[in-house]
Image (tube, rainbow, N blue to C red; front, side, top):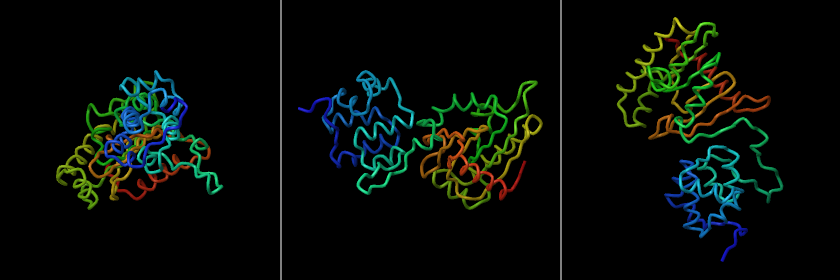
Length: 283
């Protein structure tokens, strides 16, 4: 019988099971722990030792009373469970360090730009709205943007009008060109008609025009296939992605902070600026 100190090593086939891969994609660590118990025969105490948590904390995670959101904790769990690189990738992590080559692999701790990982945009909404309330600059890269800035109850709408004495907000919004081939492709990816998606973009533009008198507003259309969904609030980015079958708000969201030498913030900001420079301004 394995003791609490025995390392955990699931068979390769366990990491390939559909329910395990789905749990990794959704960053549902409670489900991952349950599968480790099921396929590895590991007790809560053994899991706790492997991932450097208390048994009480592992119990809370397994029973859905606590969520894991920090990137460093994901790393610790992946290392403790001896996840293969494919499983780490599904969890959104870099491959494990390869000690056989004698070379030091990329260490995320050296580039602390990603300071938090949220399972969805909804999980990040409180943090986003808190920063938006006092931000001087707001950049948004979206497909149609209705859920972010276009509707009265959208995520950022209430933060766009400033109280007396506050600095006017500088707002730049990039939306997918409703007449572009990329829009038709994106509509097919999410099972929506191109006409409906194009109408959503135009509605968002119309609603944004209403804000011209209360903030320094620029709205542009871009034509490339959507990949990233970005909210920049001064020196903080919230980044998620688009893919076949899911919208940006359904993706995991990374909170990225500007650091002196970090490439992520600079890279995303450079991309946004380039899209503005090549886009077609509509508002």
